[in-house]
Length: 277
Image (cartoon, rainbow, N blue to C red; front, side, top):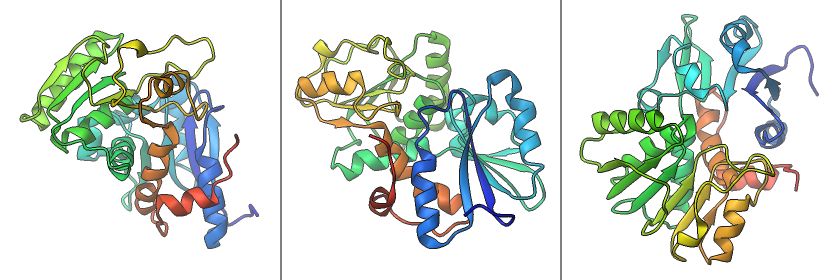
């Protein structure tokens, strides 16, 4: 029950209709008797800078989960950003430090890479295509680069985003081969849609699925539906897939530690989650 002692984790983004975190965190908090709640807050981009500062004036806020379209903006709004956030060029977690400064971190990439490794899918020495080089795509690229892939190919409809990410990766991971390319998935071991394509029913596919080899793992970060059109098409090609919530479940234990809660594992979170079909 929410009462006067309840602490809030704000889940900030726009739109909020695809948010899954409240359906995962809140059942977990109830299971451990923690008087906290994750609340979706629909904030548009023009209002976000002022809103982020304002919400941390609350005395009962524990932190904020940040999602599209605010992850990249957040990096310039916090007072201190972690190395992971600096490499990714984005933040998806914010909390207030003991000195009152806002601290930012990024966990998307770690969640995605953990999910791949849990499936037994290798990253080291592999060839990876990432479509979408915004906040989540940048975070995934940074996390994968730490596992020494043979090649990271980057594609974004905004070419400057892909080139900027490539430069950051070369700065922090000089041994990793990085190329800004088209979105052709042929010859790749792993293909990742980190773009918003798939959130809306009439979105085009982010790549040509006919160019996928059956052994290529296809991952999608879109959570508006479990089986996105891209993943459904990839399955028809015989490809293994990674759904958007896999990344979410694997990063939540890291979030819990960051916000000072008792942590758990992805399997426990899955058993408690109340996700809509």
